[in-house]
Length: 112
Image 1 (cartoon, rainbow, N blue to C red):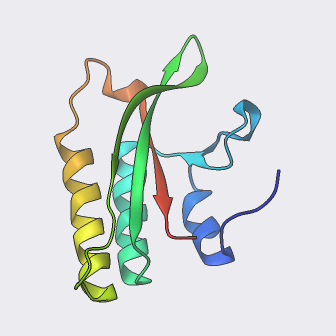
Image 2 (cartoon, rainbow, N blue to C red; image 1 turned 135 degrees about the vertical axis):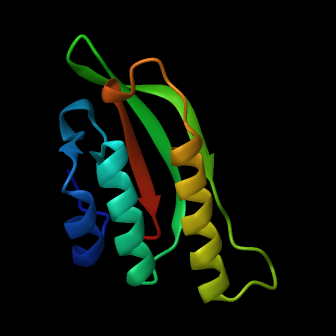
């Protein structure tokens, strides 16, 4: 599968579980892992453009079609966008409700 991420971004994301087997060029992170990844993206000044939620059903990662996105505003500086995108991602994940949180994983879409 073609690499779309910078080496720095890939190092942060690959701490999760690979989704390559299901045709997704990304990694699924637990709630704890994803919060750590968001903090790392923030410290590297990389905005998070959005993310998706996956569930493990019968041992297989499947999208549950929950997601969020964040786009830069017209007058927003890069620094402001990074901060807003990081805060939006954290809030979405911290507020996410599910019956079985241990089966929920988050997939981040940082700026490439």
